[in-house]
Image (cartoon, rainbow, N blue to C red; front, side, top):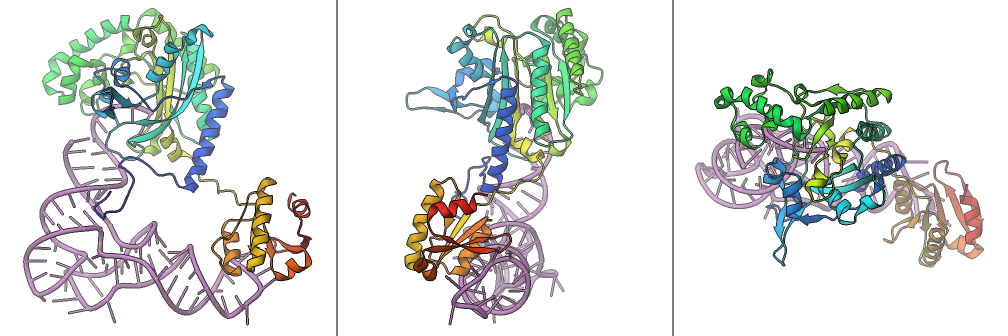
Length: 417
RNA sequence: GUGAAUGUAGCUCAAGCGGUAAGAGCGCUGGACUGUGGCUCCAGAGGUUGGGGGUUCGAGUCCCCUCAUUCACCCCA
């Protein structure tokens, strides 16, 4: 409640009113259609998971786990967390149900609400929606390119222009050891001049220092992962670029791109758009070859991404109008109102969207309502019509009106075209 | 978590240096047109100016606190 003692929505949550809901539905339909064209199967995730799942898989040292999770204890004393991202639950489901046994490559997508307790601002909410895609079982750069292309297809079909794709490779655990050694060597002499966060990261997660905005001037000459990646990773990255070229996908290699979650290996990428302000990332993802094994499964390569739907919505062109209803029934007296009420039900049964006044309003007001509802037809029933067993059928756009027998079949015949 | 800006009708916004029932447009309701929507005209409803405290003869306006929103930092979708 606010201080005016009225109920309002919780900070960081959003109410979606009918006009905007039309946009959301369209977005969801386009996501589903495209992901299924790519043969990804829909998964529906629980709203909350054991806190351990995220602590372990997302990474103890990540910003997300340290300060953004909605964690609570249930009455059984379990520590639970509202899911802040989709990849760990998907990986858990993959393992829990032994899905590798169905086929060595499993491809999933989901459309879900996520929860992170951050200070809200443009494009950043505490409850937000994202869709994601995960391909578990393929080590090929072909799969990375396929994932990237699926996101671009969706944004394209939504009418979003001006998306930029950044890609990079952060190497595998093997080559990262050498890179981190070099990075630390470079940073050590400057350590005192770095910001507080970076001083902390130096020991916990030096990779993250690379995309620090405060210290970026001091880092222009810092080593980047690409300089140290092994032959295998190098090969993977050049294959990725080749596959993207095959698809005519335009990309920028951003050598400083790293991601905030611990499980990424090799390929990382993000989609950005300048219109979004500070939160310019529409979506991002990468390869996470170590995660499945780390979570107790067999050594299984995997790759995936997530896109912020709230942010996509900000980029979508103007809202298509809510479709109007087919028929609005106008009645002029009490007895006609009963007839109209029964007719209304028959129209709905017959597959037409239809409505009538239920507030006892004047005829003029009923017509105004019909207009507001953008009704294609109006059916008028009054004393005269009742006595003669007819109704007036008016086409709202032209104002033409004709008399039709009052049985439902005759009416349906007239309005179906 | 830190910083800045902003809170006036359902929405978008007015209200000189503090000055005497807080206004407009849109929307809503009704009427002009007593059985026909949109256009036009007329009328009406709707506000403790986010909340609390203070200064003052007097506060929407100035000060303090608080809450909310927005944008940015940070981080990410």
